Amino acid sequence: MVHQVLRRFHGSAARPESRPPPPPPPPPPPGDLWERKPDRSVVARGDDPFERAARRDAKTKAAFASAVDAFAEGDKRRRGHVEFIYAALRRMAEFGVERDLAVYNRLLDVFPKEAFVPRNYVQRMFNHYPRQQECAVQILEQMETHGLLPNVETKVLLVQTFGEKSHPLRKYQRMMYWFPKFKHVNPFPVPRQLPQDPVDLARLSLARIANDLDAKVTVYQMPYTDVTETGEEISFPHIVGSQSPDQRELLARHDPSRPVFVEGPFPLWLRTTCVYYYVLRADPLPPGEKVEEPYDPERSLYYPLQLSLDLDRDMGDLGDDFSVDDVDEGPVFAMCMTGRGDQATLNQWISGLQETNAVLGRVPTLFRLDAGPRELQSGPAAAAAQGEPPHPHPEAEPWVPGGGGGGEPAGPPRQEADVTLEEEPPPPPRSSERPPGRRVNNG
Image (cartoon, rainbow, N blue to C red; front, side):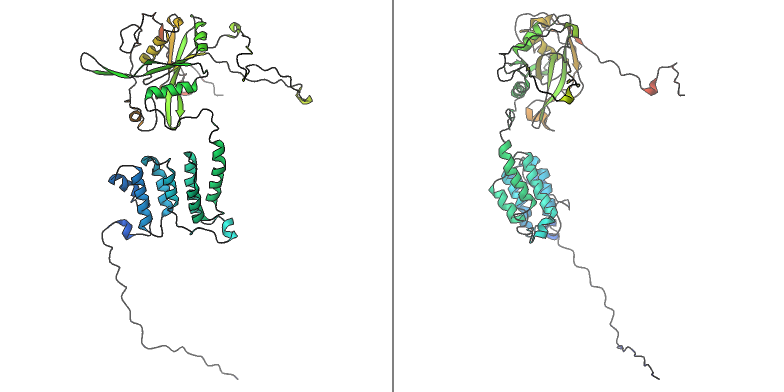
């Protein structure tokens, strides 16, 4: 018989003394948050270096560069650099550096060098450090939006940061391939710097949207300010119009018994600036009164107006009729741009058109003016950038040609035009606003 002896655990009689918890560390001395917490993002803590740079200096390129340098020199490990770069991309337009290539290269230099380079093919295949690579691609996409072509310094910074087989470098290679091909593809490019003078901007806009190269742009009134006898200052806007010889000929053949319409405003975007224009047009003729004029084959040698082609068709297409829905629109006789889109100002434009279009004195004119912005718009400081104060929409009486207004150009007396303001019909009643006495059968 085997007896099992139980082993006992031997312990020491002395127990460890209970030690008090260590005291908390002393609070950091008062100072800049940058020095107290270098391991957290500056932007995430609400301490925006760009806001401090704007308070210290004006919002210039030097202030933006000083904020970027302060972040790069504040922490050698560049903690929170992704959040800082995203904040810098959002604030570039405020400092006016959104089209500066050197500033984008400075932002790419914020990334720690050789820290995100993949070491093997597995890391390259699984998008090594995706947040940092997406941030670099966002920098290149903003450069692409503003039409900036990267240079050799951009490539060197991307190779040092992400390596040869990274997504940002692929993005750089695509930009270097496509940008030179599309640089001069637009035959009518918009100038990079738009004219600050509203009259010059209106000239450029009307010449751009005119369908005829022979269209003549005329300045009917320059902007000026007049002082009345009571000492009140009255500002008069600019009025610039455009009309081609063909439009003048169409207006001369217009039936005086049919009215013409002044419609607008219609928006036109020139880069980040929106201007508004108005048109003088008429309704299309009824089908029975249309006269088909033969095309002149010598009018346009490069772009013929009519083609007679006998194309071979398949057997399956013999029973199908090829048709195109052609929407008939009325002729447009003239266009204009003005700094104030009220009826009195547009009356002055019609009065100026009568000098070369005598038929307007016998044709009734109706105004179809939409409610909405009727002045140049280019951001929050549109009026200040264009040098023209915003004008309210006055409910003024129709201006009568020859009535002694300050904006009428000097010239011989003209025949007054029949001007009428056409009101829009009231909207139809909704289903909940049926006329009384009408029964609705629901069953």
